[in-house]
Length: 275
Ligand code: SAM
Image (cartoon, rainbow, N blue to C red; front, side, top):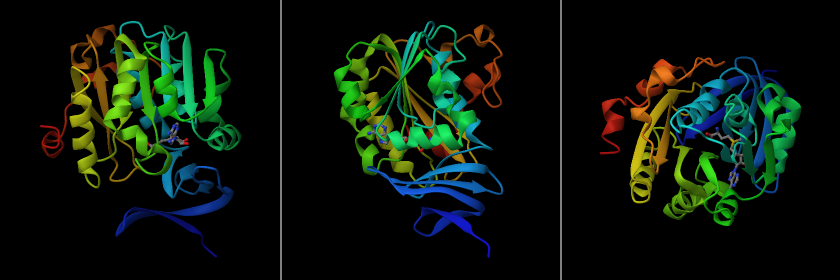
């Protein structure tokens, strides 16, 4: 008997993939957590029926959350990740020697626990001495830590369930207050095909808080539409003013000094969402 997992990316459209084995299927305190082995993408973390990360393509998203913002800030020392319990963004942050402390705040300890067990090549950085892991609501953490971070990365689930507060103007104001006077933040902001209004609304809200706002994108095959966007809000440094020749070639498979600015060149239908 064949077993297939289907993610409904809209009520009438989805992707389906053949499953070899189910490792975990558990309703945690916050969400349905499934860890499955798929033929095409290897081990896959699914939360509330949505693909979070997979063995095969995880490095695209994790590199693009971490490196554009960390090479825009001239000397990032203290970094916060809201969400990101699979550890992939933390692994990428640790490639920056200037970072002295990386704080991860994920609301669901089960994501961290099962990612360590079934996605060790993604969660490997969570044990690093520079890393501090908290199980908490990122919305609360942000409001309790003013003027503390050089960079904040929001690697959350979609704006439903526990992450609904992480896409609000109040949260962006909280991030602004948690950042130092020259801090920068980046958040994953979904896709222009099925959630165009989210990109537009987040851009509007972030522009009310930050003087510099930029949107960039990457190709993530297992995310809805494959065209994934990220929104950066900065108090002082503009990613488009970085001298690419100052960006070192590091151990990556998607991000590069050549891609740093190119990622901010948007297709016209995406430009139109943030005009
Ligand atoms: N890359 C994925 C994406 O773009 O959808 C996100 C992956 S990461 C596993 C998402 C994490 O956000 C989950 O582990 C979830 O527990 C966490 N999360 C959701 N709401 C949160 C909140 N309010 N505070 C902290 N973490 C939260």
